[in-house]
Length: 91
Image (cartoon, rainbow, N blue to C red; front, side, top):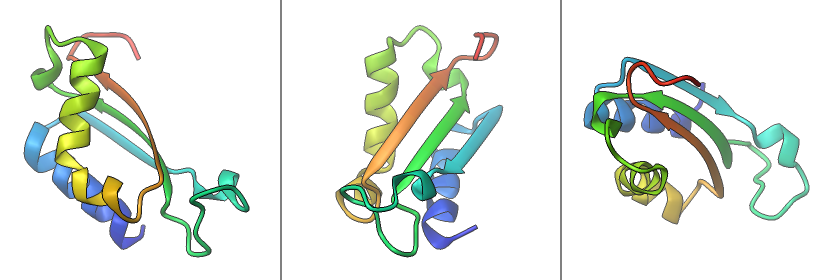
């Protein structure tokens, strides 16, 4: 995986200590679209399960992730699809 993928993985792991973390670089599907870069790593799908999301609304969960990845979202990452779950919630 690339450097941006690794950064996303490392930051989400450090901030949330997830019990499940799946990151998919979806940039290939967006080739030629706005924000797509020739080297990829511009569009990602994230599925994360962590205790930090227990009792939080969907919007609150997304805001927590946006805060953790603010540098990436301000720069190389054009789009981030998030599915954030508390342990025991269905994906």
